[in-house]
Length: 320
Ligand SMILES: *[C@@H]1O[C@H](CO)[C@@H](O)[C@H](O)[C@H]1NC(C)=O
Ligand SMILES: *[C@@H]1O[C@H](CO)[C@@H](O)[C@H](O)[C@H]1NC(C)=O
Image 1 (tube, rainbow, N blue to C red):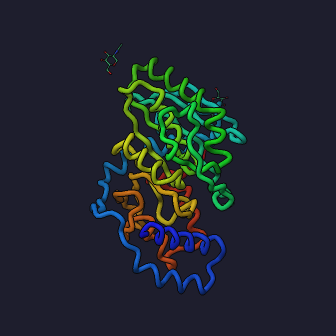
Image 2 (image 1 turned 180 degrees about the horizontal axis):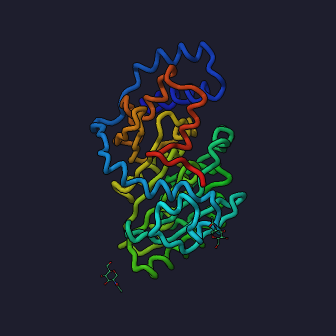
Image 3 (image 1 turned 90 degrees about the vertical axis):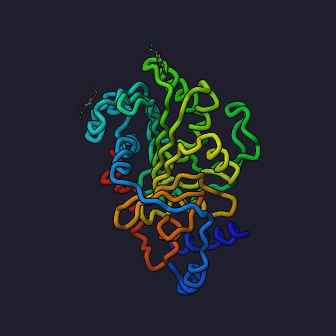
């Protein structure tokens, strides 16, 4: 009931933002905003500067797929040089129909890194509002053992549909090669924007097919909702404490699709206006320091805030 009401509120906010806020809408939002209730009782905590800095290497990985496979395999793009220890192993995609991905090993993080291309920040709104929001089960051949109640949306034509059919097998094979070449047992899946959606689905796929001793970390930036509450619970259960969903100030992308039935897993890290990072417990915290409350304040949001989607995240903007 509560989540239904919250979702309805969010839907009205999100459509208001997209369509240049009518006065009626403003009045409605002003009335409902004070009633937003935190869905989560655990306290919001502030990250230390060292904790914030620890995300920098992942932010670099998330940003660089648009540099293209040649530059990624040479690891010579300008931002690439910030992670000089990284050894690329494989890259794929064309940045058009098939989003770019790359896989390699970072000895400093002692982890295989799997990264997926973000959407172009200037195109994110049309992509999000054009979403096909039907929820469908994961392909049982590729995701054996996952309950048919676990649903993800079949939209993001550039996301999981191409991933599952075209890239899941080469990505898995590249991860296996990298694990064996570097004797690695830890895998980090990174993605920004629509790459977040693919990162979550890919992590589920990799965990099913890699040895059970493999440990995981998932780091995403500005990701939309990927699936239903069963999917969110699946991620919580299979990747406990391993998810960091970083959201920047008033980026509205994480509120898409603004439809009842979609839910984020745990792990929100919200970057506040003062650029401090806070950890928001639960699936979608209503705490004033977390994204929903930032977006809900109609007077605190302007259409140019969509630029928050591309960063900066601790000084790093998405893109080559
Ligand atoms: C990066 O390496 C590729 C492949 O060796 C080369 O074609 C390209 O010119 C290099 N780019 C830079 C910026 O050095
Ligand atoms: C590979 O790593 C495991 C621990 O993860 C270690 O026990 C083993 O000795 C390593 N093998 C090699 C060849 O380094």
